[in-house]
Image 1 (cartoon, chains in turn yellow, purple):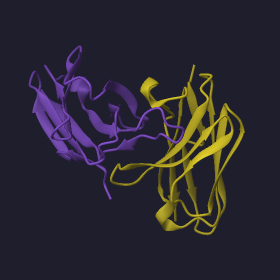
Image 2 (spheres, chains in turn yellow, red):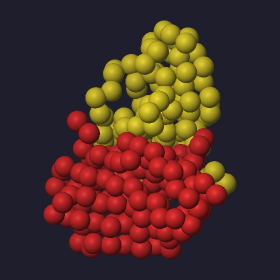
Image 3 (spheres, rainbow over the protein chains, first blue to last red):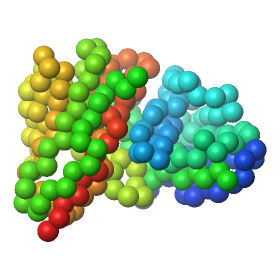
Length: 113
Length: 114
């Protein structure tokens, strides 16, 4: 059973398009995250949600909008895609605190052409 | 500003050798230091973690050494195996805060050669 699943795994789209990435976790965790991993493998947090409430919103362009319909789901919608948005986006979840570890999904590789 | 600095960027170690990856942090409020392992095409996975009240933690072939005064910590992989070939990330966080988050180092690509 996949603990944190993301769809799609690959996404190729043209500049200016709008796209969404979906994430679901079946671990019963109460906190979910979006991380961006750039071409140099650097991982940087974008957002975190705790029980559907936005907790962390790093300096991410307004074109990125997370949505959490329930605590098992955290989706990421991106408007007006730019070349610089090309990266691997990881969803993760944890139970309350980082000491229990984050469980990451397998990532969505977004390529903007 | 990179709050957690990691080195080396890449590392090649012979099978059976010791792999050592180093990290340094700036924020003295950090109080939880995990290491994550990432295989190609997969998300990072928690490997081992330490709190600053101990200087060393060992789990199997993996050991974290922690130097609070120097604000440095390192991962040692003993008897390195080809299956250990992966990218390793150190990380740090300020625990027990509502807006806690993991701040990752820049990663080390480890290759174990026969």
